[in-house]
Image (cartoon, rainbow, N blue to C red; front, top):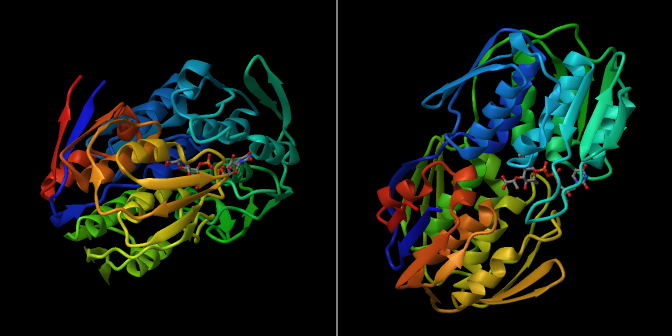
Length: 417
Ligand code: EPZ
Protein backbone atom coordinates (compact mmCIF):
# COMPACT_ATOMS: atom_id res chain seq x y z
CA UNK A 1 0.00 0.00 0.00
CA UNK A 2 1.26 3.45 -0.95
CA UNK A 3 2.12 5.99 1.72
CA UNK A 4 2.57 9.74 1.62
CA UNK A 5 5.42 11.55 3.39
CA UNK A 6 4.96 15.20 4.39
CA UNK A 7 7.68 17.47 5.77
CA UNK A 8 5.98 20.27 7.73
CA UNK A 9 6.77 23.98 7.90
CA UNK A 10 6.29 25.16 4.31
CA UNK A 11 3.91 28.00 3.39
CA UNK A 12 1.77 27.05 0.39
CA UNK A 13 2.06 29.58 -2.44
CA UNK A 14 0.76 29.72 -5.98
CA UNK A 15 -2.13 28.65 -8.15
CA UNK A 16 -3.91 25.31 -8.40
CA UNK A 17 -6.77 23.94 -10.49
CA UNK A 18 -9.57 22.09 -8.69
CA UNK A 19 -10.91 18.85 -10.20
CA UNK A 20 -14.46 17.78 -11.01
CA UNK A 21 -16.72 16.77 -8.12
CA UNK A 22 -16.63 13.08 -7.18
CA UNK A 23 -20.08 13.26 -5.59
CA UNK A 24 -21.59 14.83 -8.70
CA UNK A 25 -19.82 12.51 -11.15
CA UNK A 26 -20.96 9.28 -9.44
CA UNK A 27 -24.74 9.83 -9.79
CA UNK A 28 -24.36 11.49 -13.19
CA UNK A 29 -22.45 8.51 -14.63
CA UNK A 30 -25.13 6.21 -13.22
CA UNK A 31 -27.90 8.35 -14.76
CA UNK A 32 -26.72 7.07 -18.18
CA UNK A 33 -28.60 3.86 -17.27
CA UNK A 34 -31.84 5.79 -17.82
CA UNK A 35 -31.46 6.12 -21.59
CA UNK A 36 -30.09 4.36 -24.67
CA UNK A 37 -27.29 6.03 -26.61
CA UNK A 38 -23.91 7.61 -26.05
CA UNK A 39 -23.47 10.08 -23.20
CA UNK A 40 -20.27 12.14 -22.95
CA UNK A 41 -19.23 13.63 -19.61
CA UNK A 42 -16.22 15.95 -19.27
CA UNK A 43 -14.23 17.21 -16.25
CA UNK A 44 -14.67 13.80 -14.62
CA UNK A 45 -12.05 13.39 -11.88
CA UNK A 46 -9.59 10.48 -12.19
CA UNK A 47 -10.42 8.58 -8.99
CA UNK A 48 -10.77 5.02 -7.72
CA UNK A 49 -14.47 5.61 -7.08
CA UNK A 50 -14.96 6.61 -10.72
CA UNK A 51 -13.19 3.43 -11.85
CA UNK A 52 -15.39 1.38 -9.49
CA UNK A 53 -18.52 3.00 -10.93
CA UNK A 54 -17.45 2.31 -14.54
CA UNK A 55 -16.63 -1.28 -13.58
CA UNK A 56 -20.11 -1.72 -12.12
CA UNK A 57 -21.81 -0.13 -15.16
CA UNK A 58 -19.80 -2.40 -17.49
CA UNK A 59 -20.95 -5.40 -15.43
CA UNK A 60 -24.54 -4.32 -16.16
CA UNK A 61 -23.84 -4.37 -19.91
CA UNK A 62 -23.12 -0.67 -20.34
CA UNK A 63 -20.37 0.40 -22.74
CA UNK A 64 -17.93 2.66 -20.82
CA UNK A 65 -14.69 4.38 -21.73
CA UNK A 66 -12.52 7.01 -20.03
CA UNK A 67 -9.89 9.12 -21.88
CA UNK A 68 -8.26 11.63 -19.52
CA UNK A 69 -11.12 13.48 -17.82
CA UNK A 70 -13.73 12.53 -20.45
CA UNK A 71 -16.05 9.57 -19.93
CA UNK A 72 -18.40 8.03 -22.49
CA UNK A 73 -21.22 5.81 -21.30
CA UNK A 74 -23.79 4.02 -23.51
CA UNK A 75 -26.47 1.90 -21.84
CA UNK A 76 -28.03 0.65 -25.12
CA UNK A 77 -26.71 -2.80 -24.26
CA UNK A 78 -28.03 -2.84 -20.67
CA UNK A 79 -28.62 -6.55 -20.06
CA UNK A 80 -28.14 -7.25 -16.37
CA UNK A 81 -30.07 -6.06 -13.34
CA UNK A 82 -27.71 -7.35 -10.67
CA UNK A 83 -25.05 -5.33 -8.84
CA UNK A 84 -22.96 -7.97 -7.03
CA UNK A 85 -21.45 -7.76 -3.55
CA UNK A 86 -17.83 -7.80 -4.74
CA UNK A 87 -18.44 -4.62 -6.73
CA UNK A 88 -20.81 -2.81 -4.34
CA UNK A 89 -18.60 -3.42 -1.28
CA UNK A 90 -15.82 -1.37 -2.93
CA UNK A 91 -18.03 1.69 -3.05
CA UNK A 92 -21.32 2.03 -1.18
CA UNK A 93 -22.54 4.75 -3.59
CA UNK A 94 -23.12 1.82 -5.98
CA UNK A 95 -26.59 1.73 -4.41
CA UNK A 96 -27.34 4.58 -6.83
CA UNK A 97 -27.93 2.01 -9.62
CA UNK A 98 -31.03 0.72 -7.80
CA UNK A 99 -33.45 3.49 -8.81
CA UNK A 100 -32.40 3.66 -12.47
CA UNK A 101 -32.45 -0.16 -12.88
CA UNK A 102 -35.97 -0.41 -11.47
CA UNK A 103 -37.06 2.49 -13.72
CA UNK A 104 -35.56 0.94 -16.87
CA UNK A 105 -35.83 -2.84 -16.32
CA UNK A 106 -38.66 -2.92 -13.76
CA UNK A 107 -36.44 -5.00 -11.50
CA UNK A 108 -33.08 -4.93 -9.78
CA UNK A 109 -30.98 -7.00 -7.40
CA UNK A 110 -28.35 -4.89 -5.65
CA UNK A 111 -26.05 -5.95 -2.83
CA UNK A 112 -26.73 -4.07 0.39
CA UNK A 113 -23.85 -1.58 0.70
CA UNK A 114 -23.32 -2.11 4.43
CA UNK A 115 -21.69 0.44 6.67
CA UNK A 116 -18.26 1.98 6.59
CA UNK A 117 -15.81 3.59 9.00
CA UNK A 118 -17.92 6.71 9.53
CA UNK A 119 -21.22 5.03 10.27
CA UNK A 120 -23.84 2.34 9.67
CA UNK A 121 -25.16 4.28 6.66
CA UNK A 122 -28.51 2.53 6.25
CA UNK A 123 -30.51 2.86 3.02
CA UNK A 124 -33.99 2.55 4.51
CA UNK A 125 -35.03 5.93 3.06
CA UNK A 126 -33.96 4.86 -0.44
CA UNK A 127 -36.08 1.69 -0.12
CA UNK A 128 -39.08 3.46 1.39
CA UNK A 129 -39.09 5.93 -1.48
CA UNK A 130 -39.03 3.14 -4.07
CA UNK A 131 -41.90 1.37 -2.29
CA UNK A 132 -43.97 4.56 -2.41
CA UNK A 133 -43.26 4.68 -6.16
CA UNK A 134 -44.75 1.19 -6.47
CA UNK A 135 -41.76 -1.15 -6.22
CA UNK A 136 -41.93 -4.33 -4.13
CA UNK A 137 -38.79 -4.57 -2.00
CA UNK A 138 -37.39 -7.80 -0.54
CA UNK A 139 -34.17 -8.11 1.44
CA UNK A 140 -32.53 -11.50 1.30
CA UNK A 141 -29.03 -12.93 1.49
CA UNK A 142 -27.51 -9.46 1.76
CA UNK A 143 -29.26 -8.18 -1.37
CA UNK A 144 -32.08 -5.76 -2.10
CA UNK A 145 -34.51 -7.18 -4.65
CA UNK A 146 -36.86 -4.62 -6.17
CA UNK A 147 -39.63 -5.42 -8.68
CA UNK A 148 -42.44 -3.33 -10.15
CA UNK A 149 -45.00 -3.43 -12.98
CA UNK A 150 -44.67 0.29 -13.58
CA UNK A 151 -43.39 3.02 -11.24
CA UNK A 152 -46.05 5.58 -10.45
CA UNK A 153 -45.56 9.12 -9.15
CA UNK A 154 -45.97 9.61 -5.36
CA UNK A 155 -45.54 12.12 -2.55
CA UNK A 156 -42.36 11.21 -0.66
CA UNK A 157 -41.16 12.80 2.58
CA UNK A 158 -37.59 11.98 3.67
CA UNK A 159 -37.40 11.57 7.47
CA UNK A 160 -33.74 12.63 7.23
CA UNK A 161 -31.96 14.62 4.56
CA UNK A 162 -30.21 12.02 2.41
CA UNK A 163 -28.06 13.02 -0.57
CA UNK A 164 -27.90 9.71 -2.43
CA UNK A 165 -31.41 8.86 -1.24
CA UNK A 166 -32.71 11.99 -2.96
CA UNK A 167 -30.63 11.18 -6.06
CA UNK A 168 -31.77 7.54 -6.20
CA UNK A 169 -35.47 8.38 -5.95
CA UNK A 170 -35.17 11.31 -8.36
CA UNK A 171 -33.63 8.98 -10.97
CA UNK A 172 -36.43 6.44 -10.45
CA UNK A 173 -39.18 9.08 -10.62
CA UNK A 174 -38.15 10.66 -13.93
CA UNK A 175 -39.51 7.59 -15.81
CA UNK A 176 -42.47 6.94 -13.48
CA UNK A 177 -46.04 7.52 -14.66
CA UNK A 178 -47.37 10.73 -13.14
CA UNK A 179 -45.98 13.31 -10.75
CA UNK A 180 -43.63 12.74 -7.81
CA UNK A 181 -43.05 15.30 -5.07
CA UNK A 182 -39.97 14.92 -2.86
CA UNK A 183 -40.10 16.75 0.48
CA UNK A 184 -37.18 17.36 2.83
CA UNK A 185 -35.00 16.55 -0.19
CA UNK A 186 -31.23 17.15 -0.05
CA UNK A 187 -30.19 20.58 -1.41
CA UNK A 188 -26.53 19.74 -2.07
CA UNK A 189 -25.08 21.18 -5.32
CA UNK A 190 -24.45 17.61 -6.48
CA UNK A 191 -28.20 16.90 -6.34
CA UNK A 192 -28.89 19.96 -8.49
CA UNK A 193 -26.08 19.01 -10.87
CA UNK A 194 -27.68 15.58 -11.37
CA UNK A 195 -31.10 17.18 -11.93
CA UNK A 196 -29.58 19.53 -14.53
CA UNK A 197 -28.21 16.54 -16.48
CA UNK A 198 -31.52 14.67 -16.20
CA UNK A 199 -33.34 17.77 -17.52
CA UNK A 200 -30.88 17.90 -20.44
CA UNK A 201 -31.85 14.26 -21.08
CA UNK A 202 -35.50 15.35 -21.29
CA UNK A 203 -36.67 14.86 -17.70
CA UNK A 204 -39.16 17.31 -16.22
CA UNK A 205 -37.84 18.38 -12.78
CA UNK A 206 -38.57 21.53 -10.77
CA UNK A 207 -37.03 22.67 -7.49
CA UNK A 208 -33.78 20.66 -7.47
CA UNK A 209 -31.45 22.34 -4.97
CA UNK A 210 -34.39 23.16 -2.69
CA UNK A 211 -36.12 20.92 -0.10
CA UNK A 212 -39.09 20.33 -2.42
CA UNK A 213 -38.52 18.72 -5.83
CA UNK A 214 -41.38 18.08 -8.27
CA UNK A 215 -40.83 15.48 -11.01
CA UNK A 216 -43.25 14.86 -13.87
CA UNK A 217 -42.50 11.41 -15.31
CA UNK A 218 -41.75 11.09 -19.06
CA UNK A 219 -41.74 8.13 -21.48
CA UNK A 220 -38.05 8.14 -22.29
CA UNK A 221 -34.86 10.14 -22.07
CA UNK A 222 -32.08 10.77 -24.59
CA UNK A 223 -28.28 10.84 -24.19
CA UNK A 224 -26.38 14.09 -23.58
CA UNK A 225 -22.98 15.75 -23.27
CA UNK A 226 -22.33 17.51 -19.96
CA UNK A 227 -19.49 18.79 -17.76
CA UNK A 228 -19.08 17.83 -14.11
CA UNK A 229 -19.19 20.72 -11.61
CA UNK A 230 -16.08 21.57 -9.54
CA UNK A 231 -15.45 19.60 -6.35
CA UNK A 232 -16.42 21.88 -3.45
CA UNK A 233 -14.84 19.58 -0.86
CA UNK A 234 -11.49 19.47 -2.66
CA UNK A 235 -11.73 23.26 -2.97
CA UNK A 236 -12.42 23.58 0.77
CA UNK A 237 -9.54 21.22 1.55
CA UNK A 238 -7.09 23.32 -0.51
CA UNK A 239 -8.42 26.55 1.06
CA UNK A 240 -7.96 25.12 4.55
CA UNK A 241 -4.39 24.09 3.72
CA UNK A 242 -3.63 27.67 2.62
CA UNK A 243 -5.12 29.09 5.84
CA UNK A 244 -3.25 26.51 7.91
CA UNK A 245 0.20 27.31 6.48
CA UNK A 246 -0.17 31.13 6.30
CA UNK A 247 0.06 30.60 2.58
CA UNK A 248 -1.20 32.58 -0.38
CA UNK A 249 -3.05 30.25 -2.74
CA UNK A 250 -5.35 30.94 -5.67
CA UNK A 251 -7.73 28.13 -6.57
CA UNK A 252 -9.01 28.16 -10.16
CA UNK A 253 -12.10 26.60 -11.79
CA UNK A 254 -13.90 26.61 -8.43
CA UNK A 255 -17.55 27.39 -7.68
CA UNK A 256 -17.46 29.80 -4.69
CA UNK A 257 -21.27 29.76 -4.42
CA UNK A 258 -21.05 26.13 -3.23
CA UNK A 259 -18.73 27.07 -0.37
CA UNK A 260 -20.45 29.90 1.49
CA UNK A 261 -20.40 28.18 4.89
CA UNK A 262 -16.74 27.16 4.50
CA UNK A 263 -15.69 30.64 3.33
CA UNK A 264 -17.58 32.19 6.24
CA UNK A 265 -15.86 29.97 8.82
CA UNK A 266 -12.38 30.36 7.30
CA UNK A 267 -12.80 34.15 7.39
CA UNK A 268 -13.81 33.93 11.06
CA UNK A 269 -10.64 31.89 11.61
CA UNK A 270 -8.66 34.84 10.24
CA UNK A 271 -8.02 33.88 6.61
CA UNK A 272 -8.33 36.59 3.98
CA UNK A 273 -10.49 35.23 1.16
CA UNK A 274 -11.05 37.06 -2.12
CA UNK A 275 -13.52 35.67 -4.64
CA UNK A 276 -13.44 36.63 -8.30
CA UNK A 277 -15.58 34.58 -10.67
CA UNK A 278 -14.34 30.98 -10.50
CA UNK A 279 -11.16 31.99 -8.64
CA UNK A 280 -10.77 31.92 -4.87
CA UNK A 281 -7.65 33.46 -3.30
CA UNK A 282 -6.85 32.45 0.29
CA UNK A 283 -4.20 34.19 2.39
CA UNK A 284 -3.62 32.68 5.81
CA UNK A 285 -2.76 34.80 8.83
CA UNK A 286 -1.38 33.93 12.22
CA UNK A 287 -2.73 33.66 14.86
CA UNK A 288 -5.52 31.39 13.63
CA UNK A 289 -8.71 32.23 15.53
CA UNK A 290 -10.77 29.47 17.18
CA UNK A 291 -14.17 28.97 15.56
CA UNK A 292 -17.00 26.61 16.52
CA UNK A 293 -18.65 24.57 13.76
CA UNK A 294 -21.65 22.27 13.52
CA UNK A 295 -21.97 20.07 10.44
CA UNK A 296 -25.35 20.32 8.74
CA UNK A 297 -26.98 19.41 5.44
CA UNK A 298 -26.30 21.93 2.65
CA UNK A 299 -26.09 24.91 2.78
CA UNK A 300 -24.77 24.30 6.31
CA UNK A 301 -21.12 23.48 7.03
CA UNK A 302 -20.39 20.21 5.18
CA UNK A 303 -19.59 17.07 7.17
CA UNK A 304 -17.01 16.24 4.48
CA UNK A 305 -15.02 19.31 5.61
CA UNK A 306 -15.18 18.55 9.36
CA UNK A 307 -11.92 16.61 9.66
CA UNK A 308 -9.97 19.15 7.60
CA UNK A 309 -11.29 22.10 9.63
CA UNK A 310 -10.41 20.28 12.86
CA UNK A 311 -6.72 20.45 11.89
CA UNK A 312 -7.00 24.24 11.55
CA UNK A 313 -8.58 24.44 14.99
CA UNK A 314 -5.90 22.13 16.43
CA UNK A 315 -3.31 24.90 15.90
CA UNK A 316 -5.63 27.87 16.53
CA UNK A 317 -5.48 30.30 19.44
CA UNK A 318 -8.01 29.25 22.09
CA UNK A 319 -10.61 26.50 22.16
CA UNK A 320 -13.29 25.49 19.65
CA UNK A 321 -16.19 23.05 19.60
CA UNK A 322 -16.95 20.88 16.58
CA UNK A 323 -20.31 19.12 16.49
CA UNK A 324 -20.83 16.33 13.94
CA UNK A 325 -24.58 15.95 13.36
CA UNK A 326 -24.61 13.92 10.12
CA UNK A 327 -22.66 10.71 10.87
CA UNK A 328 -22.45 8.86 14.16
CA UNK A 329 -18.77 7.94 13.97
CA UNK A 330 -16.91 10.63 12.11
CA UNK A 331 -14.22 11.43 14.69
CA UNK A 332 -11.93 8.50 13.88
CA UNK A 333 -9.23 10.93 12.76
CA UNK A 334 -9.12 12.41 16.30
CA UNK A 335 -6.96 9.63 17.75
CA UNK A 336 -4.36 10.05 15.00
CA UNK A 337 -4.34 13.83 15.47
CA UNK A 338 -3.86 13.29 19.22
CA UNK A 339 -0.82 11.16 18.43
CA UNK A 340 0.51 14.22 16.55
CA UNK A 341 0.09 16.37 19.66
CA UNK A 342 -3.40 17.79 19.13
CA UNK A 343 -5.38 18.52 22.30
CA UNK A 344 -8.87 17.17 21.49
CA UNK A 345 -11.55 15.77 23.78
CA UNK A 346 -14.50 13.92 22.25
CA UNK A 347 -17.82 13.71 24.09
CA UNK A 348 -20.60 12.08 22.10
CA UNK A 349 -20.89 13.85 18.75
CA UNK A 350 -18.86 16.87 19.87
CA UNK A 351 -15.12 17.46 19.95
CA UNK A 352 -13.51 20.17 22.10
CA UNK A 353 -10.25 21.32 20.52
CA UNK A 354 -7.69 23.35 22.45
CA UNK A 355 -5.22 24.95 20.09
CA UNK A 356 -1.52 24.11 20.42
CA UNK A 357 1.46 25.91 18.89
CA UNK A 358 2.53 23.10 16.58
CA UNK A 359 1.81 19.46 15.86
CA UNK A 360 4.58 16.86 15.72
CA UNK A 361 5.07 14.61 12.73
CA UNK A 362 4.37 10.88 13.20
CA UNK A 363 3.47 7.72 11.31
CA UNK A 364 -0.36 7.79 11.08
CA UNK A 365 -3.09 5.64 9.55
CA UNK A 366 -5.84 6.91 7.26
CA UNK A 367 -9.23 5.34 7.97
CA UNK A 368 -11.53 7.04 5.48
CA UNK A 369 -11.39 9.49 2.61
CA UNK A 370 -11.61 12.79 4.46
CA UNK A 371 -9.52 11.55 7.41
CA UNK A 372 -6.71 10.91 4.89
CA UNK A 373 -6.85 14.53 3.73
CA UNK A 374 -6.93 15.77 7.31
CA UNK A 375 -3.75 13.82 8.19
CA UNK A 376 -1.93 15.32 5.21
CA UNK A 377 -3.02 18.80 6.32
CA UNK A 378 -1.74 18.00 9.83
CA UNK A 379 1.58 16.96 8.31
CA UNK A 380 1.86 20.34 6.60
CA UNK A 381 1.96 22.09 10.00
CA UNK A 382 3.95 19.53 11.94
CA UNK A 383 7.58 19.48 13.02
CA UNK A 384 9.62 16.94 11.02
CA UNK A 385 7.98 14.24 8.90
CA UNK A 386 4.52 12.70 8.90
CA UNK A 387 3.98 9.35 7.20
CA UNK A 388 0.36 8.81 6.14
CA UNK A 389 -0.37 5.12 5.55
CA UNK A 390 -3.25 3.49 3.63
CA UNK A 391 -3.58 6.35 1.17
CA UNK A 392 -5.82 4.22 -1.03
CA UNK A 393 -8.56 5.95 0.98
CA UNK A 394 -7.29 9.29 -0.35
CA UNK A 395 -7.19 8.05 -3.94
CA UNK A 396 -10.90 7.26 -3.77
CA UNK A 397 -11.83 10.94 -3.66
CA UNK A 398 -8.90 13.25 -4.43
CA UNK A 399 -7.19 13.38 -7.83
CA UNK A 400 -3.40 13.60 -7.29
CA UNK A 401 -3.74 15.69 -4.12
CA UNK A 402 -0.06 15.33 -3.26
CA UNK A 403 0.87 16.62 -6.74
CA UNK A 404 -1.36 19.64 -6.18
CA UNK A 405 0.31 20.34 -2.84
CA UNK A 406 3.79 19.85 -4.42
CA UNK A 407 2.80 22.42 -7.04
CA UNK A 408 2.06 24.83 -4.18
CA UNK A 409 5.48 24.27 -2.62
CA UNK A 410 4.73 21.60 -0.01
CA UNK A 411 7.47 19.09 0.82
CA UNK A 412 5.31 16.05 0.10
CA UNK A 413 5.82 12.84 -1.86
CA UNK A 414 4.19 9.48 -2.44
CA UNK A 415 6.12 6.32 -1.71
CA UNK A 416 4.84 3.49 -3.89
CA UNK A 417 4.24 0.23 -2.05
C1 EPZ B 1 -23.35 11.52 0.57
O1 EPZ B 1 -23.40 10.28 1.23
C2 EPZ B 1 -21.89 11.74 0.17
N1 EPZ B 1 -21.50 10.67 -0.75
C3 EPZ B 1 -21.01 11.71 1.41
O2 EPZ B 1 -19.68 11.99 1.00
C4 EPZ B 1 -21.47 12.84 2.35
O3 EPZ B 1 -20.70 12.79 3.53
C5 EPZ B 1 -22.95 12.64 2.68
O4 EPZ B 1 -23.74 12.58 1.46
C6 EPZ B 1 -23.51 13.78 3.53
O5 EPZ B 1 -23.35 14.99 2.86
C7 EPZ B 1 -21.91 10.74 -2.05
O6 EPZ B 1 -22.59 11.67 -2.46
C8 EPZ B 1 -21.47 9.64 -2.94
P1 EPZ B 1 -26.69 10.66 3.34
P2 EPZ B 1 -24.83 9.60 1.55
O7 EPZ B 1 -27.62 9.63 2.79
O8 EPZ B 1 -25.82 9.99 0.53
C9 EPZ B 1 -28.62 8.75 7.22
C10 EPZ B 1 -17.36 11.68 0.91
O9 EPZ B 1 -16.48 11.80 1.76
N2 EPZ B 1 -29.42 7.93 6.30
O10 EPZ B 1 -26.92 12.10 3.01
O11 EPZ B 1 -24.59 8.16 1.78
C11 EPZ B 1 -27.14 8.41 7.15
O12 EPZ B 1 -26.83 7.29 7.97
C12 EPZ B 1 -18.67 10.99 1.24
O13 EPZ B 1 -17.29 12.11 -0.28
C13 EPZ B 1 -30.37 7.05 6.83
O14 EPZ B 1 -30.52 6.92 8.03
O15 EPZ B 1 -25.20 10.29 2.92
C14 EPZ B 1 -26.48 9.68 7.63
O16 EPZ B 1 -26.48 9.69 9.04
C15 EPZ B 1 -18.66 10.48 2.67
N3 EPZ B 1 -31.11 6.31 5.97
C16 EPZ B 1 -27.42 10.78 7.12
O17 EPZ B 1 -28.67 10.12 6.82
C17 EPZ B 1 -30.97 6.40 4.60
O18 EPZ B 1 -31.69 5.70 3.87
C18 EPZ B 1 -26.95 11.47 5.84
O19 EPZ B 1 -26.60 10.45 4.93
C19 EPZ B 1 -30.00 7.31 4.09
C20 EPZ B 1 -29.25 8.07 4.95
